[in-house]
Image (cartoon, rainbow, N blue to C red; front, side, top):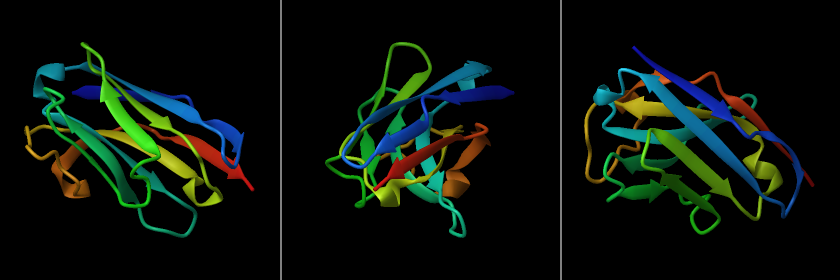
Length: 125
């Protein structure tokens, strides 16, 4: 079992920034990579960014490229720095972990086997 706990969501004005954190605990030896996804009301969950275990690979959705940055520290904590936020970024953001190591890291929801509870990000225009 792996537990994922997100934090850092909130309300911010358009153009502002937030940093999300996700801490993995439990059987972290099964963590090959980690990713961020988001789900807006009435829409399907979509990929935002991913990073693999050795930080050699990152990938971003086109909609956030150049504005968001995913990173990992030396433990199993993943960050999502979100700059120049737009109203369209409003969603619940989920952290997830993949069991397998991927290079490039995985963009598909089906590659992730554990998910956090999500943290709300609201961007006011």
